[in-house]
Length: 224
Image (cartoon, rainbow, N blue to C red; front, side, top):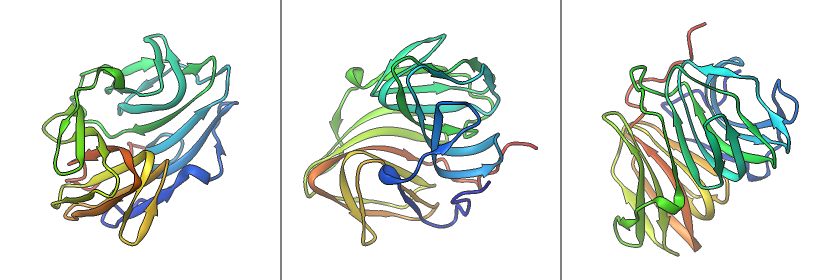
């Protein structure tokens, strides 16, 4: 199943009210944002775990990156409450579960194959700094190919960014306008390589997750 698989084009999904799609595991549902492949795929997805649900133990051959949006995500490495950012690089293994239920934004098969930096970071530990007029930012991850941040946009702030090697923005709260389109909680925007950003935060401002630089090469799905 391919979803928003033309990475040369702008893509947007307003997932806050989209239907949940059942996964192969009972109690685990999904809202796809982009995807290349079948059940094993290069994918960006919102995933919901019902209370008491779990996924089978598995190895992340292509790596996994996720942000906990609601509830508490759990595996053998610990309990990760809402606001936690987690990177499980290629060849890491775990058994995801949630006793109370949770929702996560997850990206699969999007790592440098040589990356082995496994870590997690909670929003309470972030260091915020000014990043332009009406913007503050906190770094989540940076390497030679990409940067991942949390950003807070003040009410009415205009956010203008130069072209990058791909950019994704996911709304955690509040909202913004871009390209004549309104983005609200759990909306997702992907801008292709070579596209700039010109957005305006809404009257309540916006708290967003941002990823840049990761689409310099055409994305591919995992090996068959």
